[in-house]
Image (cartoon, rainbow, N blue to C red; front, top):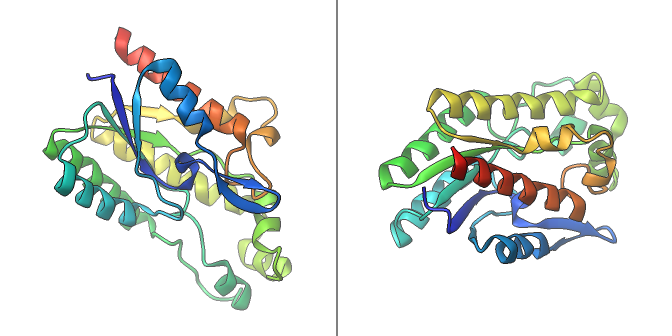
Length: 229
């Protein structure tokens, strides 16, 4: 296994997006520190708002232009896929609403992304998405006037946001294990902390500097384990 490089395919969590004074900014400092300390180059092809379908398209383009990435190709999808069109939920809390990527489609496309990378000669690794703070996230999506009451009328309770997101995280593990793909469990790294509030931003979904450091520390431990296996 080549340890000199990592390619990241995922969403804004691994891109380095964070909140500063209520606005989203890009902070690559933890990735840069990881690169300096480990001597490992990181190609970050993550995109804000990316679902697994968008990720599959990006992977196809990347392979077409650059061929198979050296080292590890880390997939980090599921957070945006498990999300909802909250304005539609608030407008029609009595209606049926689907996640941005329905579960059956998510599992199929995630598997296609793994297979595509393998066929190209890459070494795919599945990153289990970090958890969401449902109360913070609900406050965030309602900050511009969406009705919390109507959204909760549809959800039943605020923890349903967490459960939906966890369902997709479990699906990532299931697909990866069924295809014999290594897993890096970012979720467990967050949940193992006694206090998780300092790891997530005001929006409840993006990691703070402390959270981003934990993510790259987890990558580092996974690389160490692979090197000694």
